[in-house]
Length: 375
Image 1 (cartoon, one colour):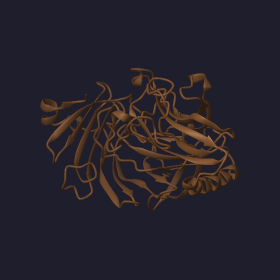
Image 2: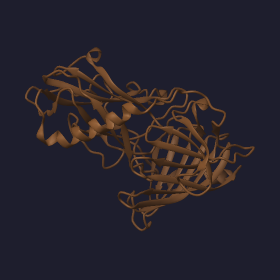
Image 3: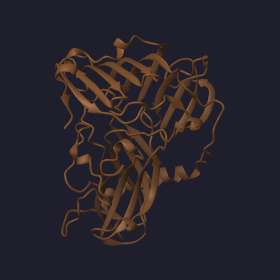
Image 4: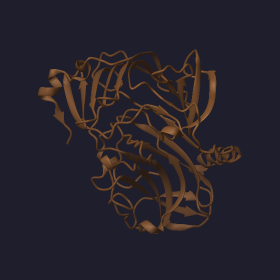
């Protein structure tokens, strides 16, 4: 089973931070305060260019038992033409080679329609029933995205562990809960991936208002999204919290995304600063396997989880994607994204078709004249 939490649509970043692991703790330093974290950008195989050290700190875990890996996808690089995945693997030795790693679990990447996201994952695995003083758990983000091919398209993080024959007291609660979730997971039937007649795409040009809520921290943000496939432009304007500060969780922001030029402008309005970022490829706003999305169709004409009305639903792990059931000639409008385990949700409402004036997608003067480039 895997669980997810905390998508931040209102985060500014430089496009260099991609995956970090804190349980068990990754090699080297760790910082996930912002998605520009250099500690999350480690590409060289097999362990991101960081070797294990003799006598270095390692996490003790009982062999053969369940365990929960916790990590963050520090930026999202979903690639529609060949969707990627995240996997967890195991190898024996201080510095094993790539071929030594055995994949224990793999989960699909997901499409949040925004590269600037931070998503936390909790993934339950079963460890091999072998003991070892020096062994490695590795988390990879296999993006398959050619726009990320500066040093390959895969990000690596390794954690040094020791597998013991005896139980570890401080891990007993983690093991017990993970065992139960794996038992429940085994009882669930796998959905066979197949195209469905309800799979659909949003209109080629439309706007939608949204509200994003994270109940665990009572965080709200709201705003408007402009989407235009013909020009490959997007714009997001939002208010986070009460909008009075200049922080990602409390401020006012404008984002202009030009996928033709490969540039994104991020204006922190209260801070009076604009950042210029790199972009991956444009993603169509679609639902279902027919359009190479990683979510599977599960229900039609059901009450929307996000709000009132009837929706069609697709599922990708812990995510439920919803589109309004009353499809129009121009397409199906997104209704929401909902997390089964946490209740986090993004609701979309009051959608209107374009086209829009080109000025909508034109960055403001501050960004064009004084944009701060990514490092």
